[in-house]
Length: 272
Ligand code: PAF
Image (tube, rainbow, N blue to C red; front, side):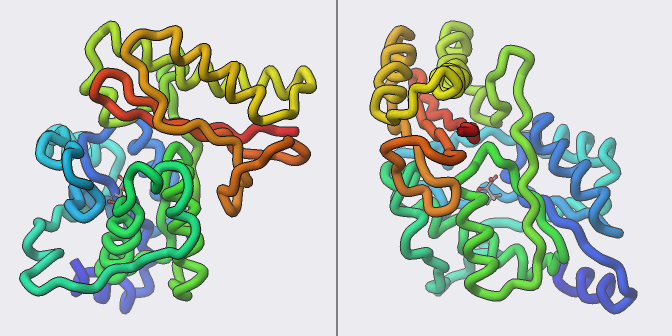
């Protein structure tokens, strides 16, 4: 892949890159469409990255269907699907990781302490292998996008990072490969994430600006669904992800909820 990228660059071709963990859905396809517009050659990687999964998480059971993924990528006119294996990316003796100091200490980083180290490390490796001029990430993983943007600035990667809007099912559920785990009754309960974000937006529009009050309302809504356990609900600064007590400018509301055994995340910018 790296040799191929070098050849493309020597022929003055620009590379647009969409990193994924596979089991592609409409959300990934929208990232590919964005990438297609932004580079001469579109590369998609499929790699379930072991270093971003903690103990007891779903690394072993993460859904996979390479044949279907390749077919979907072909339909989106992807030029290259890069599918490295675990051993070639993390060979024996691997010991170098990328860590950010502050952003991972919020939101998902609290219950998934090694997640962002794993993401920052694998994305750095993929950037060095694929050599893109632009890379596209989904806004659904808001904190991941913030981490990647910060890392690219801090480490002077010569890569433009583009955030693409969350793609939702018609009823509002954000698309995710993990939606596949949901049983029918859990699928209904999973709607509470989008309902919570919409409720917060409405409350704010009605003049409720106290974050604790909004979060308490949202908690009631989520707990009205059986088998839903809140990991976190946060109203925070869009750049630093620090909690905001009173809404006085646009904020991000982000939440993670475990529905049955499936942990789902979602977020929305709430305009003041
Ligand atoms: O968002 C994902 O699918 C993954 O976290 C990523 C960016 C491909 C890194 O493994």
